[in-house]
Length: 165
Image (cartoon, rainbow, N blue to C red; front, side, top):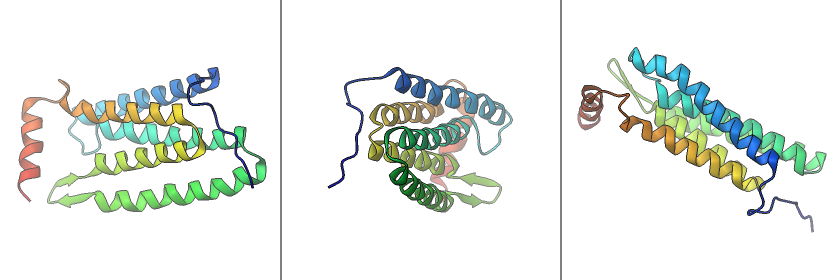
């Protein structure tokens, strides 16, 4: 029987804190780019950019976690599984995106699905703190739709477009 060492859930190493910091920085930098897109009323705005940057950082950090904590032959095999999950989530996310006339809906949903799959892979690998950090940062990105950055008119337009199929 093979055993895989995983981190103690209640013990946080400096490398884990650094990794959570990397997740936060990715979210921030994606948000900076997304803010410009949001302010110019493009479909992929602040939240979407934050989530895509977070998911990308999360997948990469999961790969680093595998290499650092598992024997090489096992981490190599598991990286193939990760690649399949990432690709599969791309297809699922594409199915969540809908174009209606000049409007595009579902981009943020697709990005949040991608982040959720990143967190799921982290949990499976035993990177519990990274998974929790990814989930919290993803939630923060999603909650930004209720922020003062979006005007009342933009929020009403979004609500109206969701209620008119």
